[in-house]
View (cartoon, rainbow, N blue to C red):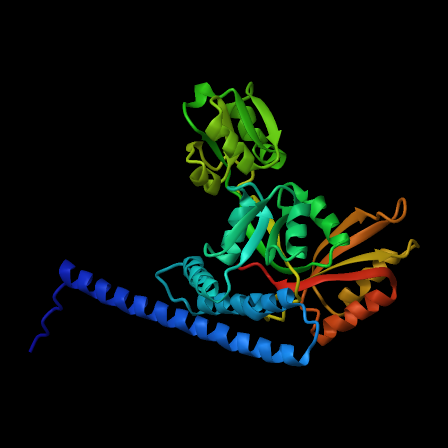
Length: 380
């Protein structure tokens, strides 16, 4: 007897299935949120019990350790991406879970995150990418102010730019670590897509184009070809440029999607950056060390002896132990003329015995060796 062909599913049935699935998702989201609340209660009890045995505990620092666990979140995101079988893309699934974790964490302890502002900058976009939209993002006018907000406990964490793929390192961020006790707790890589934005009018109405100096440099060839005779003005940030474009007729801004949304600007052109793979890396700074996630990096700053072969000796332990270096940069030392410090990043965690041995060797042969932190690598 011939098999009858399956009847195609009608639209009403599919909609009923979606409604049913949505109900299940809703129930599971609230179930997860209740678990997060219970986690907070357990952590609070453990913290209060520990305080009974430890006098003089730094409660502000302890509460950071109590709630947010960067290595735990990195492990969750890596696991859900590895388990994803589509049709949703891995990055889409990771974004959804990031927002779920952000919302649940806010039930435990709402976090305030300082970033290099004003609103609408790529640094704010990086903060939201890393922490999710449930955090309270607090704009600061300078990188030093971001450090100060975290050092004082006014904000739990901070986000600062450290490197652009076309313009190089942000020296001010590196210098800020020299006199700070803060640790690197994470990193964020953000694809920089630049837009030409305006409040009102069109291309013929533009009298000035404002942006951060790096954004102007990153879109120089496009500007030369399209607006060769229009004045270009460097301002403190792309967010500030967007604010000016929203308030001043004739001013256009170069900024990202977040700034366009924040200041309700029109896009006259998209993706005007000269390099299509233009990416900026940001560091998350906090007051605590981060446990190993299984996929980590470590950053250190060292001052070598001023003698022949010093740099070779400094790097030799990494080669001998087959450890991958990911970054080496040089900055002038502020203690002696014509001497320098080295910022070095490498794969691995400082608590790993092999890494600990390397760091011990470096400390013995240098004037100064400061561990800036071990932290989960930026998500792929």
